[in-house]
Length: 353
View 1 (tube, rainbow, N blue to C red):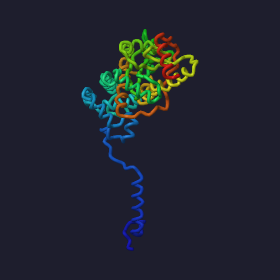
View 2: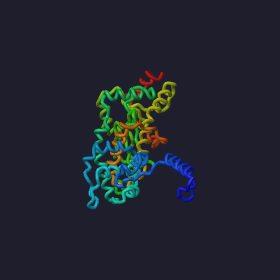
View 3: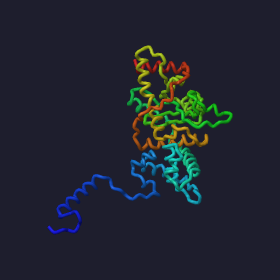
View 4: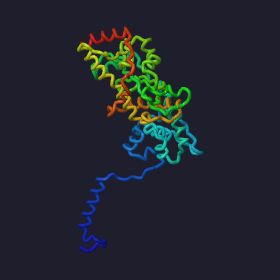
């Protein structure tokens, strides 16, 4: 066969063989594509996007549609920042808790501007708290009880309650020490009540780290709702709470087999609140770092992440985290309320004998 004029290739059959090898290489390797660096939704593949922002692209668009019109455009030295970029800046900070990483992703936006954007976006999302985190009606409470019973066979559970700490930088000042918790860390104590789908049905933040969980609960709107309304369902909490007719706690010194079965089922059901804290803090890693924002902005940001978690719970299935965020065993065990102890004994007699 005549020479085809390409050095090193003596015949057409050899050329065809090389072409076939190139086809195989192309099929077995992901194709590069030109990325629009100004469009962060297009800049990253879906897996890269979720790793950075903790949400899939479709859900970011959904969140933007919910409240994006309220953001307006933040001025960045004469260059307006669109609502989508503002939302992604906030999500990136929530995911990392690191201003430097956010600034590194968006070199054209200064850190002071990013700080203003995070505050603005957090405020906008936190305003949706009542819409996405609401205490259940009597009908919703019955549905929760059915779903909890299907999981662990514990009857009548409205939700599970516990507290968790979010660390902050010590604010100093005359009253700064009240924010130091019993582990010696400055923190805000948060109270979450969790439903059967890893969603918050009530959330309280802003209490100093030194505050006891039971005090937060008895001062909360959830407590007032349970006292003032005739629910047949109840919460499950650890022994840091007082046993009430509407809040079942473990039996501290179980004697009978029924009491031991009750405690086993109680723990299996109640740990959904620790698992939800784990999902929440793993998704929003800023909650595990010492937050450096101003105190009023910290509470707003915490509230915003709770709203975002509940929005995500409507569209996504959460996997159990590798680590449960159990802050500690209660230091002080609240004495049982007499009516609560009687209600617990009746529950054990009915369902665990």
